[in-house]
Image (cartoon, rainbow, N blue to C red):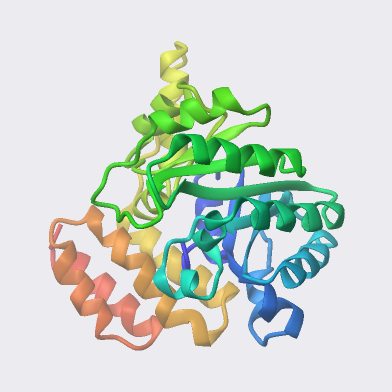
Amino acid sequence: MAELSHRAFRELLEDFGGCDCYFSEMISAGALLAGGPFEKWYIDAGPKPEKVVFQLVGADIEQISGASAVLDTLECAGIDINMGCSAPLIRKTGAGAAWMASIDRAGELISRVRPAVKRRLSVKLRIGFQDDFEYLVRFCRRLEAEGTDIITLHPRLVTEKFKRLARWEYVGRLKQELKIPVAGNGDIADAAQIVQRAAGPCDAVMVGRAAVRHPWIFAEARGIEAADSGSTKTRPIPNIEETGVRFLELLAQYQPPEFHFSRAIRFFGFFCDNLKWGNYLKTQINREKTLSGIEQVWRKYFRDGSE
């Protein structure tokens, strides 16, 4: 969710009622401690700091421990250590999923971070480099023993892309092996799947790109749950055009100009999937360089009757 799970996007989700917990973009431990020029934007926990978990990425134990201590002084719900990012550029530095190569080193990291964090401490990870459930259990039990409060499992191998379906059965199996809560993540496409997975053998469901495509997805899930319980609560009927414009307004308000283009392109790369000629519109948007230009292209699509 790099370039996606920032404050502007959280504000948009809150327009539709929000969700229980938000994870920030990946925050570089080294950049945070060095006082990077853009770090203040990454650690902006608005609009609901009490629901935001700061996600840390790094390869150095000292840096991650120090950055955790800094973030723990801010208003937030907790700190999350990223041991699941499989992007080659991240792994090559020893960060993200690279931590899963050594149980002892990952355990040492948590043992150093735990005293620095008074709030909830979580870890997001994958199955591992190989399809070895016993290794995954030993890895997670070590994290649990060192003080991790919750684990989120994205049940794919480190080297697997999204074409390979997530092995959700691993989430349930891992939950049976641990005393701490286990959340699941992967292949959630719509609100019905949120409700379905939440009713299964896991403690929580993490939603990623589907929430970008459908910022109202959590409201829809609540509507499904209400209907299942006999309530007459209606599901939201989103206005696609105005939701896109609203996002651009929030982006201008809560992100620096240097971030505007990349964040807009990332958002509309998913949000345009709601439209019949979405791929064409993505191409038009990608040619623009300013938020005002993107808005003009967006408005023109609806004005020309493309939907």
